[in-house]
Amino acid sequence: MPPVSRTERAAEAWESLFRAQVAVMRNLAADDVWDELSMREYDVLFTLGRAPGRRLRLHDLNREILLSQPSLSRLVERLAGSGYVTREDDPGDRRGTVVVLTVEGARVQKSVGRRHAASIRRHVGPALSEDELDTLTELCAKLRDAQD
Amino acid sequence: MPPVSRTERAAEAWESLFRAQVAVMRNLAADDVWDELSMREYDVLFTLGRAPGRRLRLHDLNREILLSQPSLSRLVERLAGSGYVTREDDPGDRRGTVVVLTVEGARVQKSVGRRHAASIRRHVGPALSEDELDTLTELCAKLRDAQD
DNA sequence: AATAGGTTCATGCAAATGCATGGAGTTCTG
DNA sequence: CAGAACTCCATGCATTTGCATGAACCTATT
Image: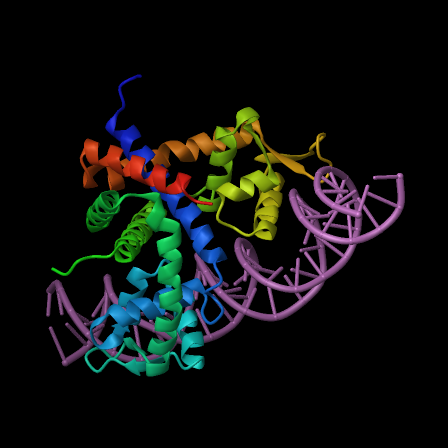
């Protein structure tokens, strides 16, 4: 076995992470829990639910969601049309738009969220031991924190 | 600290993995290496390059690429138009289409690949120790292998 | 305080994506 | 071995996405 450089190690780790994400994502997407929300819509509502006051500036929301700014703008527009969020002016910065999760939005997010969590348990839970799951959580958190 | 159930551990691990993927992906996408190929196009050419004979059935290719079958069909169509792949009939199964990487396709993939690898080294390499990178690789491989 | 430069968001428009479907080929079943 | 069921791929069509751009606002510089 030849010596493995740091570059190769980084490339292998990313490749492995990426492929695992693709494989798990495909299984999660195939599970029958996306009748009320698409995965991206769920991601937005979930992120809002975690935020203080269940509200976030569009710009801040955009940092959590892998979507271009115009696409997120229109996704939020559709969510507002469905009554799951409202859009308010930011009094502190009048350029900004604050996206606020509605009661109905929170309800739908939780409804889908419960089934999604069960789906995750089925697809991710059995793959690794509890210690391994914790290690994976920590390593990914570390990787994420090192970005930008 | 309350006891943590296996369901919670799985959900945390997936959440952490997913967010890390989003954060890294955003940085990789922002790097100036995608002038000749989009990330998805690169992914297809890269996957073909790894396959034996640098060729893959469209259906098999689709299992590696997170894209619907019609979308992949059209992506391959565009790659063929650019001269990076050719489409051949599968003699063994006449329903099938075999996608073959061309010499030019391999050249472009390598050209982008070199810069992409350097980009990965910059964004992923410094985040973790070498042991941690190896551990992450193994855990993600295990997770991936457990899918389906 | 005026102006230049930066930030935040929305919209026009072309391109890419997914869903539903259909055609062609293969495999299973009685 | 006939036909039903399934698999693989492509195409029509509506939706979603990204890029380019512009409007409104904020901030820094002089």
